[in-house]
Structures are given as structure tokens and as C-alpha cells.
Image 1 (cartoon, one colour):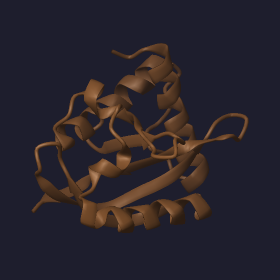
Image 2 (cartoon, one colour):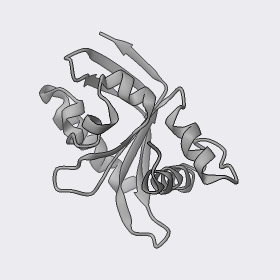
Image 3 (tube, helix red, strand yellow):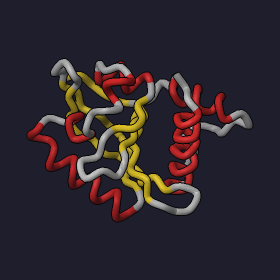
Image 4 (tube, one colour):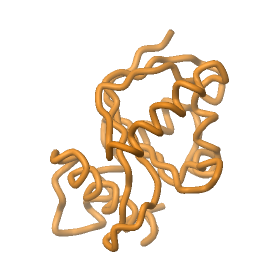
Length: 150
């Protein structure tokens, strides 16, 4: 499951989070595969999307997959806007723009919807911009550990 591309992206998520927020998402291991495995199995949600005009998820850890009731294959081809109900998409877009301008936002909450229609509210989410080693914008990521089904 963990390809070299996923391992590299996992490291980018961890380092860009620290660069944006000044906090650690998880401690970096000397072994990059171990870091990627820890992130994938973490008890918090971690998702990211790319820079497409209609951004598509390019990462979802196991907790995110379980919450949205999607496997990896289906999650990473889904436009990220579909993670929110249509009524919540404008609010979600405003939050993405705010993070894009400011580098990150914290304490976000909003309603999301799983692939089977289960609604839940995410709480205390952090959203940040992903930049690579050359400081090129690569998309955005979000993490949260609190949610409640509605």
C-alpha cells in the first residue's frame, strides 16, 4: 500500500504542517517508511488535496477513510468539495481561501458527509497549505481528531 510516492507525500504533510503552524503533527522518524505508516494509522483524520481547478484528494489516512466510508482507491479520486454537503460547500470554499491567504487556519468546524450520506460535524480542524522543498505550492491538507455524527 505505501508506495514511495505516498511515503514522500506523507513526509511533505508532516514537514509542511510544522512549517505552517510551528507544531508537530507527529514526530519524524529517522525511517521515512515508519513515519508514513504512523501517519496512515494515526487516530486523527488527515486528508490532502492537490492544486487542480476542482481539487481532488491525494491522501487520506485510515481514520479519514473510515469516517467518510471510502477505501483508498475511491477516496483519492474524489473531488474534495464532495466531502461536504452542497449547502456547506460555499462555507468550505471560504475556509480554504482563508487558509490559502494566511498559510493555515485552526479551530475550524463544519458539517461533512460520508459516501453513504452520514452527516457529521468536524471540530477544531487545522487546515494548512502544502509547499514542497522548493517552496512550490502543492495543495492543502486538513487534520482533526474530533467529530460528532449528526
